[in-house]
Structures are given as C-alpha cells and as structure tokens.
Image 1 (cartoon, one colour):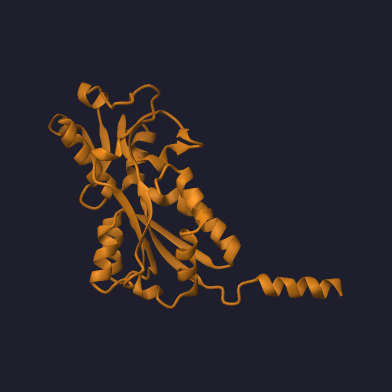
Image 2: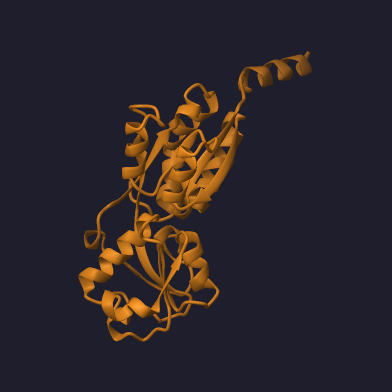
Length: 246
C-alpha cells in the first residue's frame, strides 16, 4: 500500500510533458546559465541544450536557420531586431540581467581600482571581445575612448571572438590585461583571483541583456517554462551572485 502511495505521489509531481529546449546564450552568461539550467532541469524534468557564443554570431546563426528556441543575448538590440524581423515572438522579450564590465589581470596587484594601468601603459597585450559582435567589447572601446587611452593602446589590443575567449587570453597569460564580464571573475562577493577594476556603469552604455522566445520555440512547453523560471527568485538569486545587476 505504501509503495502504491509513493508511486502515485511521484506521478503527481513529475512533469506530464517533459520536453527539450535549445538555447543560444551570450558567452558572458556561461557560468550562471549552467547553474540555472541544472536547477531548472531538476525542478521541471525538462532538458536544456545550451550553445554559447558572441551575441552577433548567435544572431547570424539564428537568421540562417539554426534550430535555437530561446536567445539569451548580451544586449537588447539584437532580440529587438529578431522580433522586428519575425524571428522571435512579439512581446516575449525581457531583460534578464544587466552586465558589468571589468578590467582584469590574472596577476595580483596589476590592476588598481581606478584603472590607472591603462594610462601608464605598463602592459604588453590588452584583450577585448570583438566590438562588432560582442557588446562587452563595444563597451570596452567606449570606456577607453572616454579615458583617452584608445589611441595609445591600439597596437597592444588583442581581439577575442567573444568575452569567454577574451578571458582565456588573460587567464593563460597571453594578455596581461583583459576587459571581461564581471561575472567571469566574481565569486562569493569579491574578485576571485588576480586583480581588477570594476568599471563604473556610467562610463559606457548600459549592458542590458535581453532574453527572447524565438519562433521555433513558440509551442515548446520547456521553452516557456525556462523563460518563466528566469524571471523567478531562484534564478534571480543565481544571476545576482555572479555580479549582475537586476
């Protein structure tokens, strides 16, 4: 009798229509999305397949027929464009996080708080994401322009395809400095390793990161459930723990 009751309870709590959803995710959101996905799959029974990359490249893949059902972008412009062009469901777009930019070095005490190392020029290579396809790269260019160091740093700049590759350049020592997403170097409320300057948010356009339901996911139960989960307290707590603003 107890076994029958336990089986009945399991059937009541298990999702009746577990599905799979394919999600394109901006590279800066890799770590938090992996954690959110694990919690979501455990709570819902749905399966999430993640693909990470620069937002501009993900956009190109979507318009060329890639089978993504959700996009988590690193900006607000591309999701809006996808809605306008009919690739995304109108009214489904929302901001899931606001990104923070950081100038980071794997070396301790290399970067001071105001980022004076940029003025001093005491570095060999400075990595940043391709500003044409990655919003964090565009923000980095904006910051250096405001600081008046873009011209002097120009020959030292090394471009990564996305902010994940940019971080790897600095983490491996191939670049002494890198403009990265704060989420990549933030853990337990502080910089996890090396040294960093957290760039004031008023030094560049706000990096509002929007999510949107793509037309391919319109009737996918898992897609709708995941977007709803991203708006909930559990996901928001994870997002905040990685240094994003909400």
